[in-house]
Length: 301
Image (cartoon, rainbow, N blue to C red; front, side, top):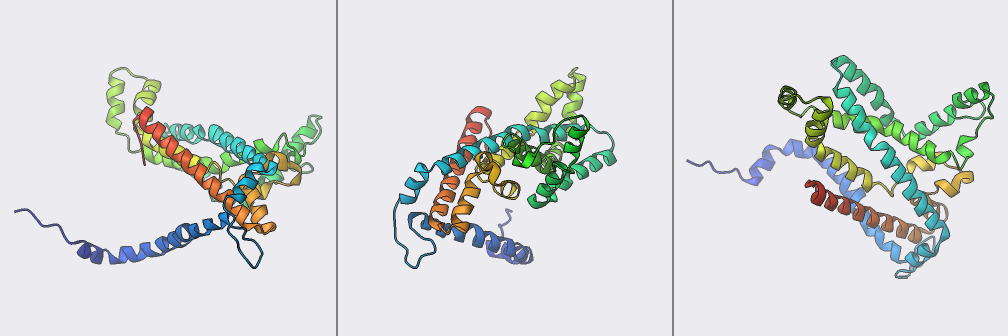
């Protein structure tokens, strides 16, 4: 005799305590992620520190498309974000593969712990660490340069060095998070696949290429999509590290929106920038997912 499925109300009642634990997170997400969407309407007004608000249509978007500062910020955002993805994206995967080869469980946990610690540092802490290391008067790097007869470099005030600092600091902080996700995924790969491949005479490289990477392909694509979704949204890292001397190579869309909206009071124009960033980010994610579905035959959306 076929058993009847329990009613949804019965299931919800039995799991009421779990749902109550989930409720604060759902409320936070709804309030700060969905209700705030109503504020996007300000992008089509002249809202600021004025008593009256008037609808201006696409005037704010016309202004930003004609702005030299906006296009400079857009170019910097693309350059910094793409460099972050290109140089950062393979590193967590490589580290995870190296950790996976360690035989000692203690060694694995120790390495994961050491590389994961920086992820818990705020960008303010990370910025302070790099500022001390690269200080022109007391930093380790400049002390070394002086010791070998070179002139000290003002890294944080140099348009040549500031972008590399952003990229290196991003990799240092984020690589542990990505590596831990890949390590967790690697534990799901069936060991019998490696044993069968070894019996067939496959070496480490062939096992990596034909077993390991295909087995974690979905995770790799997911991580890529997560990185692309934030490609235009870098803010905290730049905000705590940059200064007026490197605006030309470091001012990004979010810092530009922050100065316009919070510091200058032009909230409508700032909202227009944020709306444009959101639309482009959505297109990037959907485009990448479509490419993955057609070329790699795998999709998460």
